[in-house]
Length: 232
Image (cartoon, rainbow, N blue to C red; front, side, top):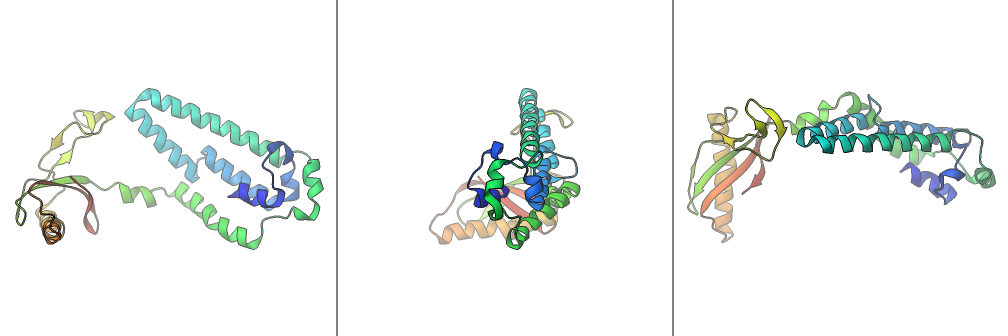
């Protein structure tokens, strides 16, 4: 977005020609430094949370992938700092001098567009749980035997993701299932049956897509009740 702001004024993206933006368009330069540091993973900003989670997931899945990801993050940070140094610092380039009054700073419309991004970058960097809690709910599965109209529900289960017992080892696509899932209470099961499985089976029958067999419902348990992630 910021590249687009400066391109609209200069019609050029060459780093070597942009030296001295800090002197000519200080507000733009401040925003560029801010978002560059966020992209580089400065603690306290959203980029740090994202990079940390990527590294954690990569290292857990396969250590060598985590090492490659770490190298990539370092490489990206070096490039971003190089870019900031060359376009913000130093003397104003002849190219920018030649633009004269056409090189204006961020206007009100652009500021209004960028302001929410600045706020979100800071807020999510300090309070990542605002988003992470939405995807940290327990995920369980319920199997039902369906004859086309009626169904019989089996005990709920939960995938066992870690490679070893006691939740240890790298994460996997699933090393099996544990049943019954303690987080799925009788009340939750009643909701799953009345609000999810039965309406699904009846809707399929109404559309002449009668299903017979095992219906697998992958569920996320939220504060508002169970939500369907997938059907198999």
